[in-house]
Image (cartoon, rainbow, N blue to C red; front, side, top):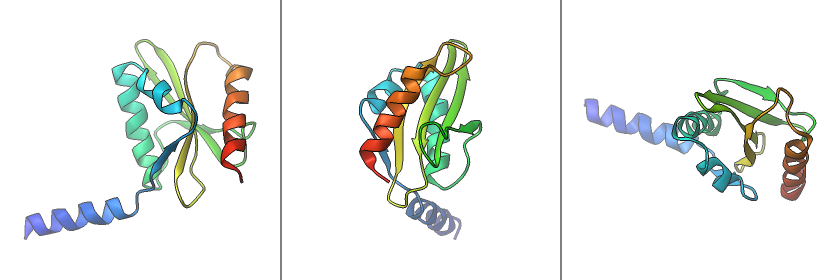
Length: 121
């Protein structure tokens, strides 16, 4: 009985999980994160796929409506994953990068905005 319940829960959770769609080089950029930052970003993206909020995030209205930024920190620095999750078909990962200044660089915001425009509204 215990195994049946576990399988049911796993299947039920998986059924509500949106696929990830990486735009541009965002997947390669995420894979280039250090191990701990990549693991934390992946964990948070999994939350988003299941319709939950990530551990640390902020809205990125300058990129586009509904766009958010996952904030990850490890011993090597701060990392960001900019994504769009309000569409029903997928979670779109627009841009992944290491943040090196207090304010997000204009080039990073503009790149995410161009990729947002690529997927359409």
